[in-house]
Image (cartoon, rainbow, N blue to C red):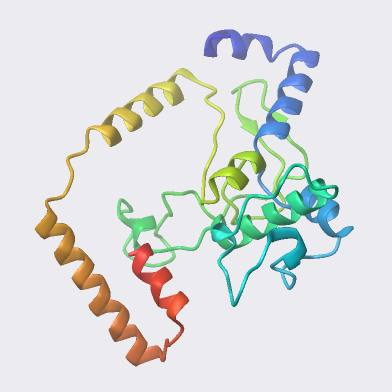
Length: 225
């Protein structure tokens, strides 16, 4: 379907229902389903890691993204997989504001600045499609989670964002973003070295100020910078 055909077809109730069913199957905006299936509805925030038998030997505080992808041959794969998704999303895919969020914002005060990631998001009880505008609003019970697909995030083990390309403008914006990104010039080695050096200095300064001695935490902050 072209974007124009899709907008025409959403006038049909069956088409709308099937489209929303498809989108809810592919794009997730909260963890309700996975928490329910992983721990019988219990919150897994305090149970951030599965047992050693499920993931293999682990020591200390291992970042979930560094753990192995669950083995599909496991007899309890579905529960282990759901728990893995919860851990990955909670540690890697929940948005936290930073200066990057506001680099294009024209607001001068904290209250007038707008996050370019559109966070936090509005909570929505039921997915729906506005017939007059064609806008699709997906069900969401968490304001800070980036859209994700459970299979992709478990396989790639990193943060992600996934979006349904619904309009011609969205398609053009996607083409522009990809071509602009892949043709971006790379930094010279001396520039990269200078940035890395500045990052190390910044981390060391934070360590003195905030008493950060954990090696994993320092490594994480350096990579993020």
